[in-house]
Image 1 (cartoon, rainbow, N blue to C red):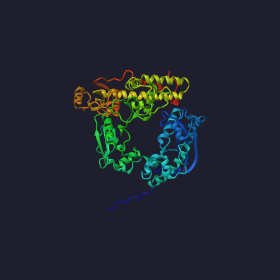
Image 2: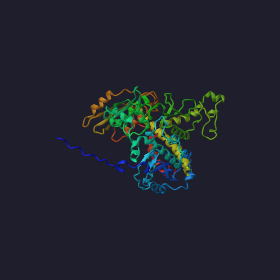
Image 3: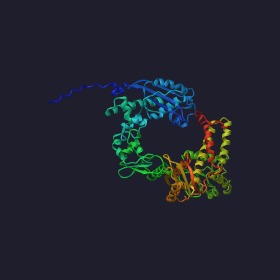
Image 4: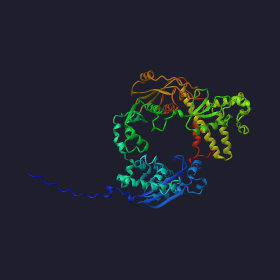
Length: 594
């Protein structure tokens, strides 16, 4: 008996829907913006440039300056060349948006670092009541990271890619010129994508999000990682720690490094070098956050950018010498000096120092002024004494006893009583505002803000660092409690209490097994743990955020936990209100806050 022969299979031609839209038929609108800053929350658009292209042919362009409704910062003017005078007669963004949206209607938007430009456009539409169309978006940064190797380009900046592709148009931080350069970069990238078989819009958009072959090959590294809160360490074949991170679910987070959602080129490069992932399971999220900081500081992984060098924190120091001065330093020592910090940047330190100089007539020269220099007349002099800003100890006009009055006042301000600085700043702000010199008043406000914020931070950290022991609890996400034992600002132990269990035995056991922490060798006027003993400043800030979270409760406190009665902590809300009273469009300009 013979079986029936199979029926012949007929070839079926695929439809265009199956193939996707060919790139030659896609109309792209390449857009670039210039802005007054880096975030749509507190910055505005100053220029929009866009170029419409299809099949390599330019169909039109769109370019206009935009009045941001606020002063353009000097560094933005230096970068872009766009001055305040250039935008005075320019239209506001609410008049420009309809024209741009009509120009881009039905097209695919392209931008270099698309989240930045598209984020500003979406925010502007939302602020002025325009619906944001469902544009398809292509980011040339993501494409370049997938197509080009580090041997070809050191980075994916627009200037670098323009040089690599020898684009006729050169970027110069003006919107239309940068958009034209991005068009040439896009065409260069599309040519390279041909070797990957990318021929349609759908393939183009998915290509940038697809994991690299190296990412797919190393997915097995996440197989043994548990689903628990903790810290993970990527290590290379030699055991060197490449990257340290934390997560509430280690397995889910680590697996994301091997998917297309991870588009950061530095991280993809790190994954290519990694040979193992070492998880460290933690009892609570706070423990994971603290362990991450400690491991980053210990190993200084090359692919971590944050918290690698806590020893490089910036401090404002009242020096120990016959005529003390305020100095910005990178080290906090147990030398008897008064310190304020740590500060987030040198600029903040300079602003805080300027605010303190307005209130206390300390010398502002940088020389180490000894009694011998003064007696011999060899000390360098300056004009501040003639301006009434200094008592001129360098010329012998003030003795050490007379100058000590100023030094003691500065030390008192740095250790707690900030009223002299606030009063001096308020007098100057009110006078400048009354004279309609609003920008100068805003500069004084910013100085005061830098001082108040840095002093409040220092006082909070100092108060925590003084405590021999603090035990606190917070409701756990799945029920029960999270427990933390903090000694001299350092997280000494962390644990949990199961739901419906009596917490006292768990608290006692955690205290008994907690790490022994000795107080730092630094005077109590500054955060002790920032130098020796106790904890680092970042760790103490993590602990304070945890203590400020909803539902957190104090279980036991040994010692006195308080901030100075006339300290900066009580002024933070006042300062926030002062900034909130200035409309976003008027940021940088002062108006009276009455």
